[in-house]
Amino acid sequence: MRVELLTVGDELLLGDTVNGNAAWLGRRLADHGVEVTRSVVVGDETDVIVEAVTSALGRADAVITTGGLGPTYDDLTRDALAKAAGVALVRDPALERRLRERSAASGRGLQPMAMRMAEVPEGAGLLHNSAGTAPGLRVELPGGVAYALPGVPFEMRTIMDEVVLPELAGIAGLPAVARRTLRTAGLWESVVATRLAEVEAMDGIRLAYLPDPAEVKIRITAAGPDAPGRLATAGTRVRELLGPAVYGTDDETLDRVVHRLLAERGAGVAVAESLTGGLIGAELTAMPGSSATYAGGIVSYATELKARLLGVPEDLLAEHGAVHPDVAAAMAAGVRDRLGAAYGLSVTGVAGPEPQDGRPVGTVYIGLAGPGNLRTVAEPRLPVPGSGPEIRAVIRRMTVVHALDLLRRTLLGLGPVDGDGDARAGREECG
Image 1 (spheres, rainbow, N blue to C red):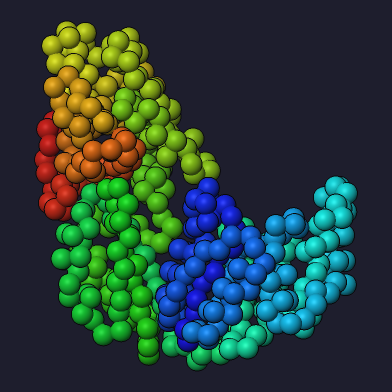
Image 2 (cartoon, rainbow, N blue to C red):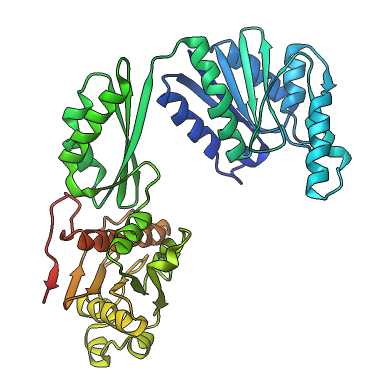
């Protein structure tokens, strides 16, 4: 089965909106054994959409479109599909009734323009949308079938998983596929790929590496007979080869793992941030119920606030500046004491794009204070990503990951890790 993707919308064509739908669809289809041969973006023009759909079906078995199914006059995908099929748009009574019922239930009046969502190409099949209002469409065309999905991401994903993928599997007789994503922190992508060479060679197994700053996700796809068994074997071997750098599975993010480990120990954490400016606190409060293990934070961006709010010795700051391992250690101890948490976590460093106090861009110190006179300072080796303004955002994100991973590893009784995956002691005192 060969499929092409077509995303519709001026906002995508002009770069105002990132085309996340195409990326998600490409991954999803590949995971299920469907060959995606082309992905195209077009603007809100009926004839352009018609040409793109018919051209795609001259090469592929099916085309999947996203966008252009809403109620406004620039939502033209349904019009284009009707024109490509040589049929009229007709009002579907069931869709009209559903629109009126949803409008009444919300207490809002139904705008006349909204009734455009009840118009479909004559003879088209409706793809149930359990997550929203506009249905998807299935339109038989010369050369193949067009599946039209809404542009709203969670609606598109719902219809794709509940309707389109099962239908494609039935049409093509696709092989059984199982997949899992393992998440790692602190390893470079090249290190991960090198260590997993033997897993790459396993029969019926495909690996995809999805790097983010200071993290690499490994998507494992198993196909063929006993796909779940193959997946389990490959997943176990990946964990053996990468060790404790693997912190979670699928949607298990690093902040969730940290919260779980803290909760299991009846402990909480407080954070003192300099260069990250509150990003660690934002990460630790993303999960509902995070207040059970996150005490709070102090963003001590100015040097004098490190002394006044966190108790960092003024002579230390005067001698070494704000970016120093002893400053990180003092910040961690200070926030732990002042906010009454079991653990204090701190970060200070140079995010760029210019050096600071003689320290190069990418210099980062992470402090951790905890029970039993635990004092740890880690200095992650951060690769500096180029020389443009993007440096700052990437270094700050890498710092968040390394800080949370240091706390995770400490809670598990492990040491810090460098980019090669080797544990490093850093500077540590444990009483």
